[in-house]
Length: 239
Image 1 (cartoon, rainbow, N blue to C red):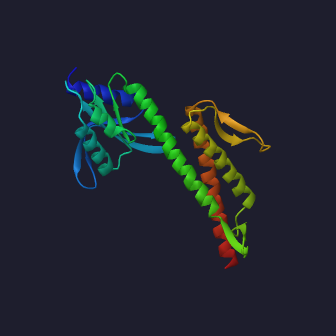
Image 2: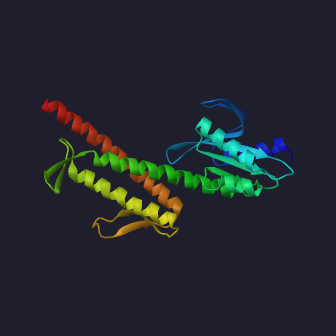
């Protein structure tokens, strides 16, 4: 294998997972144009992701400077993640520079499992962000009035079905428990309450959790959009 084959094998692995992968892709960033060894774009659970892949077919370990350079490129082009695939390994400074960042260091032999894990983490991150945003948007469908020095009353805005919104908020709260359990690596992972509201339903695996939560988020987004339409109709009628 040579450096070119290294890139081709990497791109083909991503394609086998249903991703778009281009070799030697020129990508325009906010500050400069960059040549990316392998530029990967894919949709996972309704989210589009862009990854920068650097293939280092070197006989020496990759230094810290290469990690820092890739971090800057990922930031400049607005990518979600960067990967460096090394033939021989990484210097200790490189490993430290990549820790707790969106840069992954791996080898061609470990790439498939690395990609699977990173796809999962990327989906989780975006799902949690969307869940948090939706909870805030649902809360904004209520108005809060201070009725006394130490008391507040919350009521749905005109045209808003408070019961539906409260149930949707409860669904997202259950999902929030699931994200907490995932961080603790303690399966199963809560996804919903049952019809009685007393029992929590849970997913046995992270993959199953992501699939179920993606469906829940889509349902809540649809409900939110419908409630906004109802509110606007009510406002127009009252006017």
